[in-house]
Length: 160
Image (cartoon, rainbow, N blue to C red; front, top):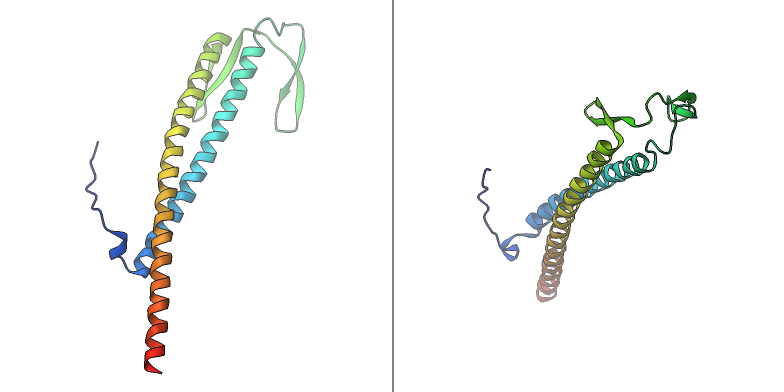
């Protein structure tokens, strides 16, 4: 793993223009990380739904004589029959599908849900740290702008 050489700079030593640039960068990072967080949460919800379906739709729920609806698109379904109710097709990513028994499929989805949960917690901590940094930069920037405004007002009254 490559280590980064990071240098700490005091926010007070930065100009208002530099602070604005730092604020803009932090805004973009928080926005990007928040979007990633949302995408991970959506993916986790989909895996949870798959897990629920696999657990509740095991071989005891279906039999090979019962009609089911097979989705062709989001809004088009056709009648079908299950040939092997104890087997399911699992999307393992990047367009690859694997046939599994319902127990293995449930384990797969459970693993995915847990992995995504861990990633979401890590990302949540990162977003929180970036948000806190953003607040600090905004506060220092506000103080600098107020100080510059007060300094400019005093200079104008002294020359008058």
